[in-house]
Image (cartoon, rainbow, N blue to C red):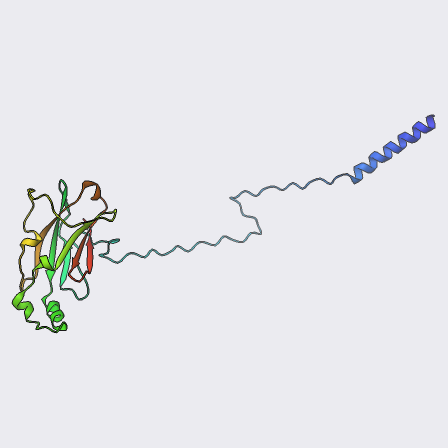
Length: 204
């Protein structure tokens, strides 16, 4: 009996020793590398090249002319325009002080190019109210062109009051008034167009 117990004990000891040698291998523990530290073998992070900012052309809706600046409406236009002062915000309407400059030589060249006698410019002149159109374009995209407060006190002369201009007049300063709801004023710009539909934008 003792010999059998001794044999069993020896067998158990042998089995435990074998299990210790052939058990499930230990799982590998990986230490996470902090994001602020680079691994010694990692490639350097390239510095991103900044994207160049392309500024919109001066005198466009995205980049209107500031007060005191002026620009020819178009390459062959006789008109150069610019705001001479900040827009005055009244109750329900706006007042734009604007200067219209005339280039009579360009006007004569355009007249001759159309097949007409260039001296018509000198003999007939030009009425800016029939050649220049001014509107206020709000940030929401609405366009305002009319003036409804007929009883309001507005400065003179307005565009329609100038009448016909002749050489050698170089420029005329006028005031343009437009009815604009108060909520549409912020972020808006002035649009000055010629009879051909070409335009220049002015900041208020």
